[in-house]
Length: 548
Image (cartoon, rainbow, N blue to C red; front, side):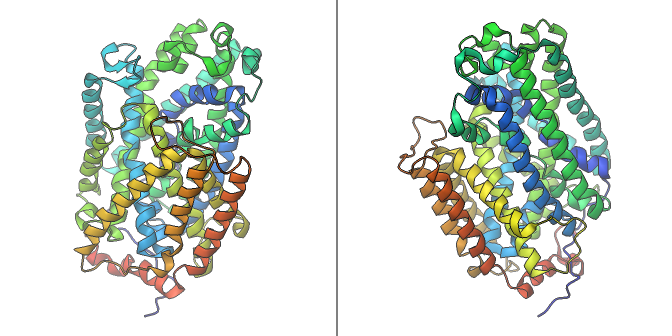
């Protein structure tokens, strides 16, 4: 049955109580989290002074991906958007993969932000973190669980109240890094950028590209999509949602680049005598910026930064707990997971999704006992999730060209395939260790969601033809990663073979990505089937939606 082109998906039970500032700060508080506390150090260890260039490159990459999300969110302002756009464009079989990675990415952020909190807090409470092993202790684990429980409890507030709390926290989170940049500029040592005679790019182009995912740089930018995840609760989403995403990414890029500059520049020259890649001071390793401030004779700033290390990760963990519950809400609207995940209480809070965000988050604490051990997997899951945006945008441009788009990505025919290629390169640069783990996670996701859908008589049709490219893409990326140049840094894990020469590996990834992109466009859902999927979540069907 043909469906009118004006049909739009609608959410049920959620309340539009967030304005432009709230939406911008929802993304900004996710971007300015634990990443700024640790990534400048890990980037300097991997890349040296050239780490500054990495932040600028990452900013350009993220802005391109963010612009794709801006058009999608303005076009279909539904909560848990990253889990729903691929569903509309390519059907359930492809949508399951992108939806599951959206959930994995979101549900793992709260634990990693707690790890950042614990690592910095160990300065005052040493029994929380073992500096020799680089892992939290048993006491630290229990404090982490308690902190995650607090995130969950605060999220039971109505969005109106939660939004007020988040805005106050985010103003603090933005102000402290800006203050840090200004103050540390007065302690600047230009020679640090080439210390030890290693030069500005001691790791070369390979080190530069590997650091984007491995050092946590891309991870640090994660969160710009939070406005998309909360789109069902944003006032005037056609105007506010695209603007909030773009503003948040631009602010984040300026702050992160400045922080990397002052982190390297403010280190006392004695700390980098053997080069930036050989920083060994345990205080710097455990709490980079606070230690640098103290070593530079700014004890007051060091204490302020340790306080911020409690506030900043907590704010990010708080909003990601929110986002996780909205993604599970979106998965329920797709009918991928039990409909109870779409239940909302009288305050418009998806309460079941909140509880499970807490429980599933706990599962990631034991196998990944530190901030750095979890960064790679989260980055890989994030990039796989982000790759769904340019695919969905390009598909929608063909399927529903007349749809209302408050923001339109310029030169989309050129920029969407470029964005997809960049996403695949980031996956490749993450290394084989991360890629094979993500493959296992994806198989688990398909099994769990498949079981759920098997018991749902109203599940959407399985659109195999529109997802025929998906297994080829995933397996192909795995094989290229295995034969390529990037291991991901593990010794005990399965390693790459280095059979594909450097430079040729990236050419192969780019060419393979373009083949997959245009194959996906050729097999996307026909217009009528795509619109029927939208209609299943449209306003005319709200009476059967979860939580209604």
